[in-house]
Length: 302
Length: 71
Image (cartoon, rainbow over all chains, first blue to last red; front, side, top):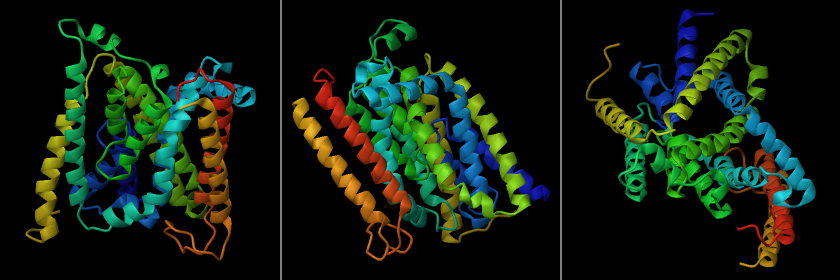
């Protein structure tokens, strides 16, 4: 396998595994960083599609692996409640149906809008719009966190502040639907799936830790379904691409597992603010970098 | 909203989605909001509507059987 392809696959795997779960937009980063390196838009290239499939599969499997106990209980609850026709047939009955209701908007909008959005945003030579949306993502995270801080009890430690808010089971189905609807914002490159879903969950008065858990529970079926629908791409690819795709998938899975472990610990008392400032900064720098390139004012020296 | 009304609404959603699922499977007719040739059969769209139809049907059952669940 050419070293060039191996390096690209490892970089993309790391980017996907980390940026998909951190609230900083994986789609934005997998467009912006190859743009900086003048690799072009790798994720939109025909020859890279099988690799993109395994990157998403790796991320979804890492999420499933981390939350496997939750998913086992949720699947059991799905079966029990569906047979009984009652949500209270299982202690996790409401949670699984909140996840399902929250998944509907992004699933439907994804099916209808993914390709038109790809055509709209990925046809440009330089990723100016993803850079602008990354800034917007930062602004949304900052606004969400500021509004949350206003609602928090004052003069108590962070742990007690968090305890004043709710858990997933306190959500209503309407709230779950709108949180899922917010997740569809991630179809735009630069808007983070986990970021915008967390902000919507915080708006529904979930604790940060619970907002993160609900975000990942909502993200898992979406990422997994999107990847599985594209699996046939793997069967038509050559051996070299399949090996590269496998390496990328493993790297993405490892990066995603470490990321989810870090984030669950971080959001016990942590806030979205550092990620907001990162997105604002990275988005602004990318915008300033790519706009002159798009206007043809200078060329990359590499 | 009363549970019986929610149940009826969800049943209507289920039927409409089922019809749409079948509609997107039929080749030779125009399918809106599709990126590939609109006259072909679109299995992903059909699957999405079929899943929503099942969810809406189960939701209607929940709403009918339990008036205590907040929707």
